[in-house]
Length: 551
Image 1 (cartoon, one colour):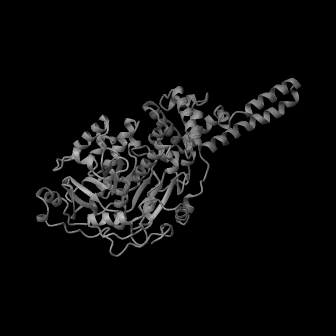
Image 2: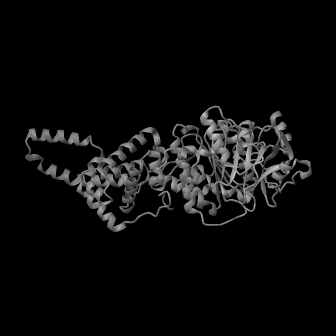
Image 3: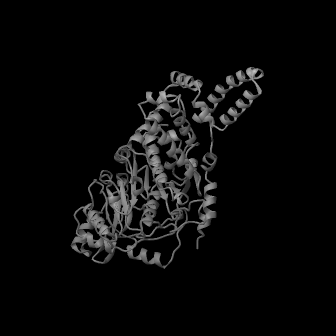
């Protein structure tokens, strides 16, 4: 039996007889199927390359010769994988990701529970795999796929993935800080101010320093000039940001900032790289990691050129726990998501949202998702029944009783409808899904560590860099402001009485307790410095839909 640990660092060669990425399979003759089932199958007969999802289920029977498929060229039309916990959503992602990789398409997977890393190692044959593959007509062969493992801020096992505060932008930052609409708009003006004054926002202490200046006595005038932000709102921003840092968010922001073009890489053998973002170490910060996923998409959106309709996607991005992205989102944030999903298709990127029910996704976004894999739903409570009815209403007319079918599906079964090669929805098909060929579970921790540290990207992103930015410039201005005052005080010292000297010493001790930022924001030197910067290098960084910075 193949040892999955030995295979984790390097991808296994694809087996010669692997059905992954194979040419179109011949469907079962229509005469062998009941008329409704034959009609459904006819909708899944494609001429070009397609991914195999599984075999058609009709009237309790699995028809191994009736293969349900999705055209490769339609994967950039986005999709939804939904279903109750434990119904097989993760294995569906693994199945689709394997076949995309085999077809040379890079894949991004967010691993929230820590069980997707097995895609890098060959699967292990057992009785359940043998039974499933026989039922669905699958020629199964164990195979691992080329993978890179990332971790937000280096917290957990993976290549550290960071973003600069400026790169993240005000809209996404507002989402992770939980700001309301007014506060979000105010934060946007503060980002604009930092841009125009040449104050780089690299990490959280840079943003905190700029807000501290704008809430100071000297900075209040600047605050009014950038749009009339109230000092109360600025104070709320400062307190919220400080609390965010206290929650351990600091490592996620900084340099080197991750270059999202890394997600578009292929392996030397031509297979697409599977980028796995390991998230178990930050499960308790769902708003943070879900918003970081949106930052990755927003950054890709900015950088990729328009390509129109192509024969295969440049990247397919699986957005797990998608409901976390939309919970408590502002109108500006939701509008930006909708625009990104609508427009990124023409740049060759497909997005699959993964969640429990379609109602977790706003209707404007759901309308953009042409491919659907719906696993079983439960109807134990009135709320469950309501969600079930809403889900059924989102599907095309069907030969099945979907209300009954969706509660009766077993693990690894789903209701499928995709876009045909002509872009039209296929008939709804109950499907018993194929088994992944890679390991269905996590690889060992030692194997994961070896895979991470042997990556060519590890040396590029492993060590954080703290270069000069807004915080350091403020410190430099503070030093410049303090030096003349110190010289004058030294010249006047002999004329002071002992009592006055003692009082001054006490005053200096109290001043020393203040932070450097507090000292500098009260300095006229800094006001002069910012005006000079505004004159000499004043500029506004061009920003995208989410306010993220262009590279």
